[in-house]
Image (cartoon, rainbow, N blue to C red):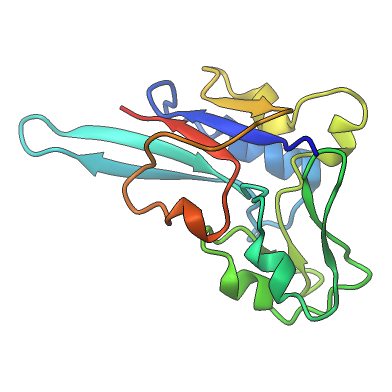
Length: 174
């Protein structure tokens, strides 16, 4: 089964949040419901302080904890590309998916009180387009990979151990 994934290049990210804005606009998410977010952090010590940014969203894991936790079978993983989706008709808003996801991807929609998360813009993928965040990224820091393979390499400080869910994201770090 092919598995879609992400490559995030921290060296290229300037923290402009165009990915965040594109995600909100494309998916029409409520004001306080963010499917993609940009974290800013400072590293180093004076006088060599650096500001770094991480753009994160659902990693569409090979073994999604959210899928296993859902009591209503509202979460599924597509066979054709491994994209993890939440069926809004089945979701009861129990928040179990949000509680177990180590990457904090599922969010409760403030309008519907149901879980939602990054869909990799599956509606765009069906048209042969890239996810909105990858298209909007002015530096190319976010790359969509249709056939991801295996995640490998370093992870940012604080990123949860890959062995838990096998997230489909690789990082190029500073």
